[in-house]
Length: 492
Image 1 (cartoon, helix red, strand yellow):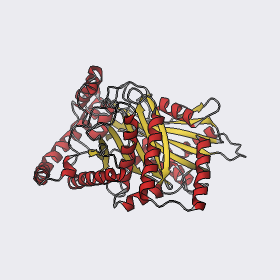
Image 2: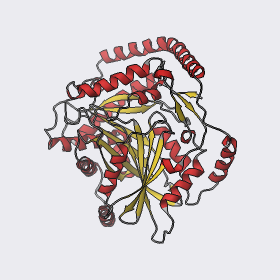
Image 3: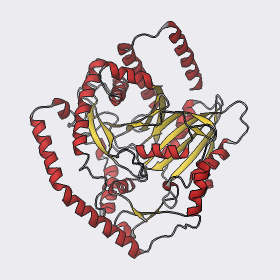
């Protein structure tokens, strides 16, 4: 039995039918012309082999009486793969757009809490001899970094797995007799009281550090670092910032990682600054045709990992920061430099605050309070009336640098999907994977009816930055890119 952290529990309490709180990923595979196996069956075998390599596959929630505190995780018990692994077939012709719409529909659906909080949806019928699967896991279970750790446990770095089956067998032998048993009321209440007592002790212990940090921030702010100050202001009201419904949209694009790194190097910026600049350019293009570009810069809320190096625990260890996207600046290079300065200032504060930012806190009474406020916020449509603290969510997750394999097949793309909320109708999450930056754009259809237009605007922003910063390719390279572009166009 393991208590949920305060942060993990909040994702359960914030969940409503309009705002599911799971994250996901869409994986694309090429099927060889001579492929005779059943991809769905192979994926089920892959998962059966991996069940004991990651604890989340078997974790179940045990709710507190009257939901007076966070639930706890219980481990063990059989996993019904026929329930957790499902099959879908796209109608002909099986285009990229059809794949995106199918994924958006699956991403909009709540998961039942009586079973482990994960699902895999195998999607077949894609044109060009491809297959895909979409995996979703509740955010109470993991964050982006833990998702990468899960991918390493699930997928192989070589076409033929080596050693993983033996490891799974050894783990299975240790858990073969485990059964999912619901703890009693006394045991659950005792766990909640012990958890909260420990958190209050920790809170008191860290209070002096918190006061010192706040005093330092006030002092540095008085010295006038405009790059930091511009992050702490309300964003402009835009069509993205409305109360939302359960309908979702999804679009995915990829750009070469090497090009993004080259752009960053020419401007003495970080890769994350380029990601933010690409999103900023895309938003300028998108909003220019939908009410105009606001005079105030849009503000992005951006997760910052608090995870120590080597920590692969399946839990959420991150906090949110605010970063100005400088969308009021038309010139793309000036905009990138402004984002670089604003992002750098915010990261400096986050580094100083890392040791005192909590990911766990007392939870008794929190489910009632947070759940009630989440429901009230949606029903009253306050998100459509008040100024937004942030206009969208942007997240950049470092992923595997090498090609991964599933059931012997190479994974061609790894597009992440995340959460949108009332007032935050767009979430752009980026995964670096095998030489590519894979962008997963999740939208509330109420805020962005056609996410493909936002995806196209992102590609155009990339081309603009590339033309302004990188030397033109040699003739042979131009021909190669033209062939690759034609091939990519035919796949989509």
